[in-house]
Image 1 (cartoon, one colour):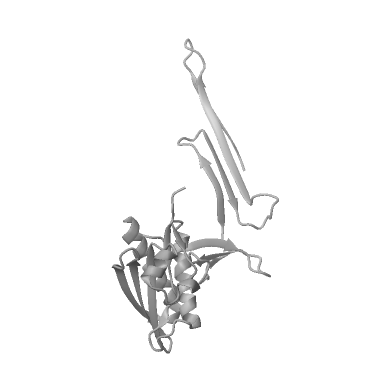
Image 2: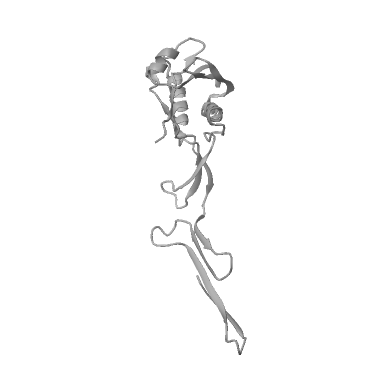
Length: 219
């Protein structure tokens, strides 16, 4: 099994107070850590254990890289600065700053995550990917389509009365195909619509070269 890249992600520091013990700084570090780990190639050492640490102590803890962030809030706005360091020599490999409303803070962290993944692997990360899923709210007969971020946060309803295509199987000719459609209203008893067909043909004989063809369909 390939060794994962180890990161230190200390709690973000409040630029206004110089404190790295605030609740928001902890939440930002934890979200960034989970976004890193989502990619499957990164492990993150305990954020709390890396608070106030130096490059040397991070190295002792086994970290290869450190993502160090700071933030400043003003009303509903937030500014962030995040830097990526190579723990082995202390060099800064990447630095980004972001500005926006506080309800966009996760997206800022995801952008930085994708930049880090590209810096380390040469390929963009997928932290800004959205996940679609179908759920049926309580006391609602119709299922709805929802979107969330990679960590299952920031869930938004996108459509109601969703029709789900569960299966479509077909060969590149008309000789055989099946189609299943399910709205979820039938529970586990079956699909709302099912259809299929098959067919073929043959030549009667070499002496009587009549070609016959037939199909059967059902729904």
